Picture (tube, one colour):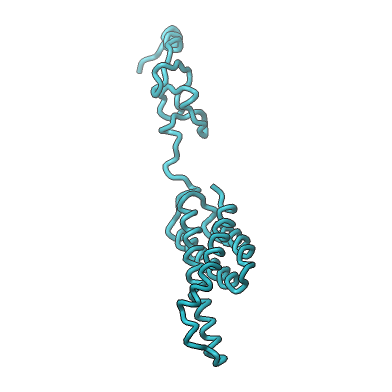
Length: 190
């Protein structure tokens, strides 16, 4: 074990350090983990001091990484709530614009609650994809409920086929999906 004298310590403190990423910059700061010299542009605030960009980046971000359970719960919640909102919205015609916008916000809140308030692009895909798929499912279920109601009443006619129903309600479904996605995007936190 070598003991350094005060003269050796003073000599090493006078030595100028240069940032390991920017050799033209003089610095007096070192990374708290790897002890490499870093300039203020490369420094990140760590838990106990400054860190370099390599040591300061977390291994996985807790806000954007999903477990399999959270992902499945988020997809199921998005699909079920948007299907319910779509069934209600498609029955109201013009008011689907307002219903869709507010339903999108409620869908986003429900999905974020079930996923542990996650963020990021995966959350956006889960949320917006669920709204699109849920609107499609709502259109099919809405047709089936209409057909069953007509058959039950006894006034179901062959002229009002599946193609005519979707042609009539496709525009309202697209408007609902767009309004719901817009409302959900406003509630989604990045």
